[in-house]
Every structure is written in C-alpha cells, then in structure tokens.
Length: 148
Image 1 (cartoon, rainbow, N blue to C red):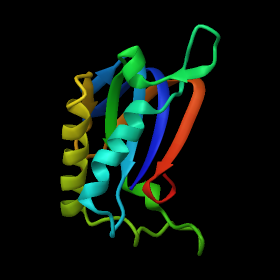
Image 2: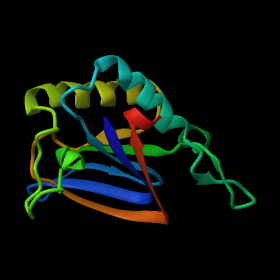
Image 3: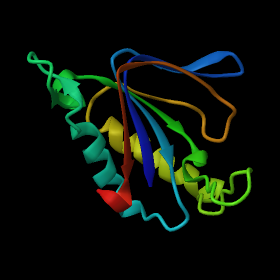
C-alpha cells in the first residue's frame, strides 16, 4: 500500500466535470495498492494518516495531526503510484493490484477513515478524474506500508 499525502488548504475531485468530493483544510490522499497487500494493514495505514503530525502549531512547527485540527480528507484511488519506470519510457504497472481487488481495499480505507468522525470525501474508483488542490506548505509525504 502506498499513499501520497498532501497537506492542502483545499482540494476537489471531478468526474465528467461534476464535483464528486471537495474539502477545505486537510489531507488529499492518493491511494495505491499492490498485488500482495493484505486487508489487515488498512487500519494501521489509516491510523498513520490520521495521526501524522504535519500541521503547524502556534510556533509554526509541524506538531499537529489531522485529528488535532479536525481537518478533512479527500481520498482518490491512484494505481499509478506503483508505476515501474526502470525499463524503457512507458511505465509498467505489473505490481499494481487488479482493479476488482483494489476497489475493495479502497472502499475499506474510506470506511476506516470515516470511523474517525471527520469529513471524508472520495473520487470514483476507476474513473477518469480531475484533481485540483492547493498544497499548503507545500507538504507532500509518501507513506508506504513496507516502510512504516
């Protein structure tokens, strides 16, 4: 499981020109799943996302979590996070989880996030989406289940 997490002042995802998810201050999380991921890792990754201290306190130090600021989350599926660009010029996606299985992981991730009681918005799995954001900081973190 690999998430690209961006601290945002706002973010929005659109499908066919229609807004499907929109948040103010919080996190945009691009979610990628690989073939050998296990469902039992999802709650651990959710806990990590919710508790990452990447928001500034009064002293402008990254010391606060999403929970501390009561921020929002926009989760967007992103199979290209497992692109393999080592050979040639076209990325390969052999490590990406097949769509039907990845969809279940994505839905579980969203369900687990919602348990925190924060605003959680999402895109549409497998759809062509447009994502618009204002990266605050900028702050961008890669969270990989193999490295957490």
